Length: 253
Length: 81
Image (cartoon, rainbow over all chains, first blue to last red; front, side, top):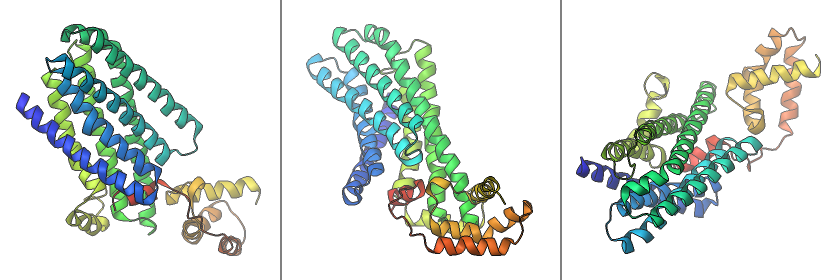
């Protein structure tokens, strides 16, 4: 189980890193804020933050573990905040309620991150750290789940609009399909974070619990597929989507 | 036709086209006027629909396309290119 989780974690980390770097390079060329936010989000949370937090929490040498954990949690929180603002910038630009919701969510992420790091610094025993970090971790998991529900709903809403545009010849089939993939990606994340929430409620340590790490990695693997199809789709896939545009039950249900 | 009826007809036509008033472009609006708006206006018993649509088309021809608008579809097109 541990080796499976490790393989899943490594694949998801590498894929997120590649996607994140590509997005940042694209942001440098286009000066687009959405690309920058998405790139920082993928590099900050799944590529650096999450794996560093998991690995460092299992190290026995505190001199090595502490700076790694601090870096990991900080990157994780930063990436999650960027993800919230990516949803706002892309789907609800100019909507005050959306900016306020993202700011509130980011506030909870930062507060949770500070409390989790504090628990790690003042306790050395894993069980004690988990007990003292339970409430902030619950806050982080809860807001993370809401952020993925939000982005999945926005993606699906826009996908339905794009389907109507396609019928009038105003939308590209590949871009339309990208919104559906974005929805699936969000729902996959909701599913694995739900497992984390259940584990947390049952008193497990999310950093060391193998069911949690395993489900996260399984979800991560599924999300890797979605990330590749959204951000760097193979030509064969885009051709298939375009061919299937006249058969809605296939690519663009 | 009063102002509210006109706004309602256009809003319904935009919804049928999967568009939002906030980021619709003039070229998209031309398609809506061409393909969906006449049906909406007819359903609201508006007189001389074709003349009205011609006037809207003429007005749209004077509108410049705002290329700065960063709609979700433009962003998702860039992200996967």
